[in-house]
Length: 459
Image 1 (cartoon, helix red, strand yellow):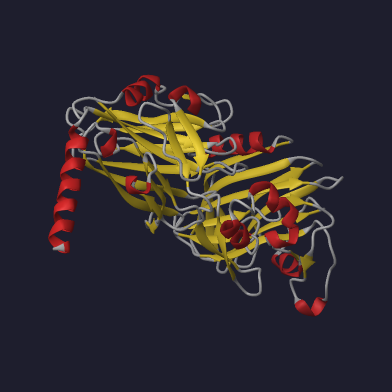
Image 2 (cartoon, rainbow, N blue to C red):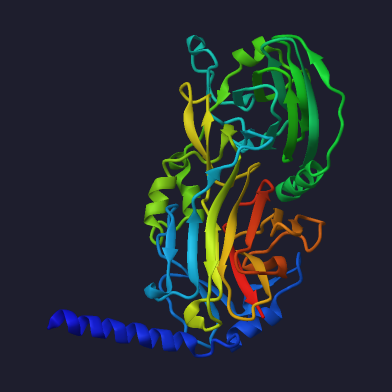
């Protein structure tokens, strides 16, 4: 008799859950109405507290009528994590959605972001081992990659002159065969405020330009960037170029204001690629080893910043939204985040090492969200970004296939950088069951962020 009794109990439980889900299903809860009323206009931002949102860590279950509590699980690392209501969290969380490759017009990203600060005490390794240890120093090759021709290449460079003398930062293209090269987009900025430099370069990169293409002989150095850096200044470059043939791209720093030749680049020492374990005291400031031991021990073995080439920088995840009722037991408010990094190759490390672009700098990532079920009478849907950490700068583009919205958070643009614990509306528009929202996000340099995306149905 145990099995029939169990079946009856389960049926009763399901019936009770169904009846409970129907309660209050005709309209949004008071909590949801307040959230909808407080949503900022598209592109604007408010503090999470003004929307009745609280960001916490751990398993907390606020009672209906209280604030929305977004409780990230303790020791959350980079694995996919779905936290349904059965685990006692509100609202439904879908974190670290896996990213899949989306071949596009730009299939390679070149990144030079390590060491981020140029200093005279930086470790270096010889370009040619037989030359011996060159000792510490500031000048040398900061990134290098063999790259194909034809397809456009995106570039992000970000370095600070931490010495007491002027230096020059270079981006040099050396083709294997006689070929043409042309810059399609260019955003360059330098400032003692690294965030300002990153923002100005990012905004400049958004403008399409027409620079004359240059004819370059095989093995000759063609400077794509020449940026003098005085002490204490950060230089940031966002650039896109195309070449008619394959070759090698170098990011280098020199004392002399003269473009280095291929022979000189090959003879330059390479700046050591720093692993977090080497500067463990800095890692403690970003990750609490007590609250996040799994993440702490994984990251300490990883490179501090990224450099090298990253194939297929455009990546997208897939997720779905389903809320058949306005009842909060149907979880009409749901939250999503995408995987934290994109993989690449650093050829300067022992002939090639896998590295992660954890900030997704220079990359465009996002998700496709299918609206499988909407509460009855739902006319609109808002997609809202929540910043859980330091100020964020970058671009979001959202479309439902019928109309599109673009929001830029950057110094001096719109509402400016998206602040810590701030919320900004990215999209608000008509919604139908079966619609798909496509969201792309591209960050500017010099900001380490953890963005969550909240879907809010609107009657």
